[in-house]
Image (tube, rainbow, N blue to C red; front, side, top):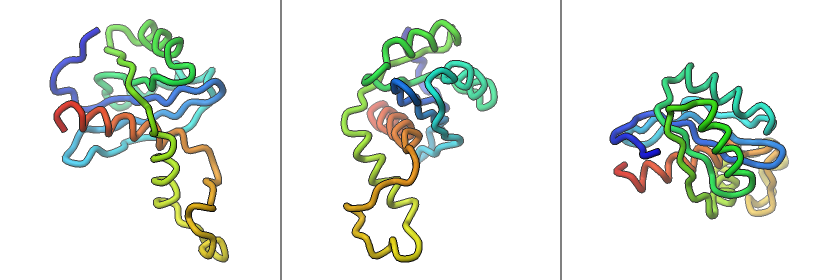
Length: 142
């Protein structure tokens, strides 16, 4: 299904085998995440339905990597006629890791560990989902 021109709020999904990152992102001068979370894969469709209704989501973006095709089909069936589009998620995990570490600086002695040697203390698939939406907005007129 084609995307309508000028939509403002999307639900971006970073699909995975066991967990998914979800983010509701508004198109602004600088796109802004209204909500983000990491959930079990089995809860993704039900949670997406809740977020669509709570935030007035106009379209859904699903990453094109692991588990993306089946999840995109499930979302399209459950949330029709809302448009669902697969989007390229190349290098988003690396970029999301960097952003997570920038936005969540270490405390105490961990501050002495160089950023390149630190690891996120939780899954950051929600950050990947935010990047999927930001990249999509940037590639489609801002």
